Length: 171
Image (cartoon, rainbow, N blue to C red; front, side, top):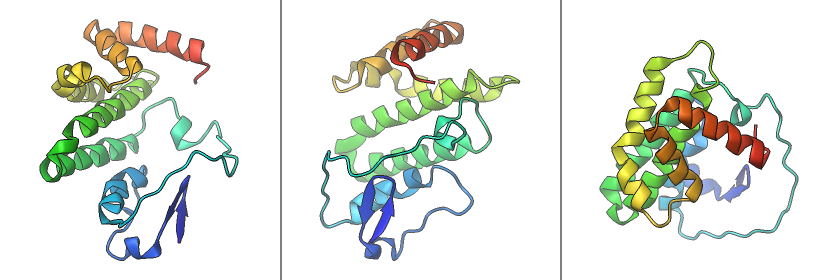
């Protein structure tokens, strides 16, 4: 068995699936392929270990780096794959795609110097699906508020995101 953060996999699932070499967010690149290939899936909520979150880890980074483009590319590939092969899951994967792009946008607002080109690209990706995702009853309230505030402009989005971080104790 292989073990990734919070997951166990049968070794045979990896016979024709590999993590992309030299990329970050590699689990996003292959997770949907592993789920598709698995004969059985199980889950539970029992806490079996402690997770140490380092302030300097990739997942806790505030600023945008070139590596974050791997996340954008991986989620885009997953979106296209699932839309074409499993259209009944399209709403769910669009919610995830919008969430992923908001994650990158939040990193971009803390990046110095500003990367206006990437801000525009990521905002454009969110705008492609914002109406559909906003109307989806399963979209979390936080994401709906993010969509509304982004419509009011990036400065408003940044202010609201900073307030959210203060209220929730996030970075």
